Figure 1 (cartoon, rainbow, N blue to C red):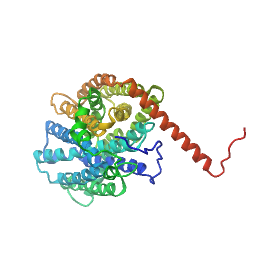
Figure 2: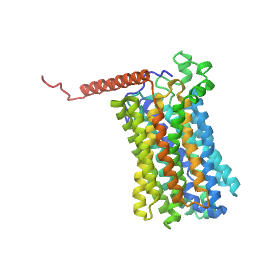
Figure 3: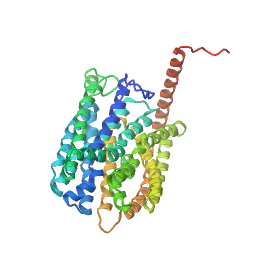
Figure 4: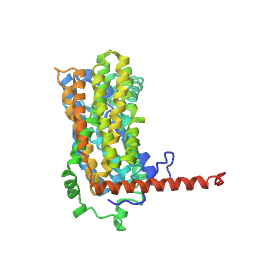
Length: 460
């Protein structure tokens, strides 16, 4: 996909360009999706008592919360190629709001399980976020752009853990019971999802020069048929072994993050005998690291690319994932609350940097099948969460034992990063594109500096 006029600089406080509007609305939309996706997780102690759920049943709901996302992520990238990210995101947000508000109608394990299964489709929002930022930003900053939009979106996993217990408490202040309170609390994220979907349609566009339908009408983008069709795009991505290596890699980082988002509150609640609000606050710290950690993963990916090209990006991905696995092993051994929190934050740092590093590589795998590649790799995250979920549904394994085995799996998965390789021609082409975009950025910065009031050229 040959998109022109990509931004070679992230102007963080600007909303005037289509690139930056897509940047800000895509991360915000993904952030809001977490409120619907995992809004029930910090309230699970209450839901458990209300519905009489066993540990095995809770484990099944954890698996359900990420299961359908695998399939939807595979499809959503193809929809982005065909319809454009603007329409795709709008429909996902608006339709996804319905099961979020409807989960309050659950009155048994079976109905609650089905509701979480339906809600899990919202997790496909990540693919659209990464697709939209990749389309909008040039090679010299695309790693940073992808990591930041995804990271600030993932931040919703932390703010959800903190805010949903507060929303729940606010509802209880109206005089309702806890049984009704958690049900009414879930209406709030549903409404926010709906409003965000409408805003996304109103304020964004698919690419720097317009929507895909307009670009195709002007002949600036090939029609989504034949060799550019969905089936051909998916087939090309699925045949590439590097895509499946990144599938495993992303399972070992984003899959782990999803798992921690699901179990952290109830883990701290049970292991350290904390109250619901305190357990949610501590669990929220894990997700709050996304404020900067995933961005750091993308920044380092771009920096490694400056000196090492695409090989540098892959090398950094391996390092980040290996460190994640080691930190997780440490977290699994902690018995003291204060130390457990400290190690959890270190573990969280590497988890999210590994995620940013993964999507610092994804844009360069196959530009003609960008949506399919992003969809398959993104689905890996949820596949990893489903696999990890089986560790935490077993009555014979404690949460700490499950975390230890998960750490070993992450270390093994880090080796898959080394299977991602590029041809000499591709490396040379992308290195040239990086230098060109970086040079254009410096030229633009110098022009802005010279145009600034009070600037004077130094005497020679």
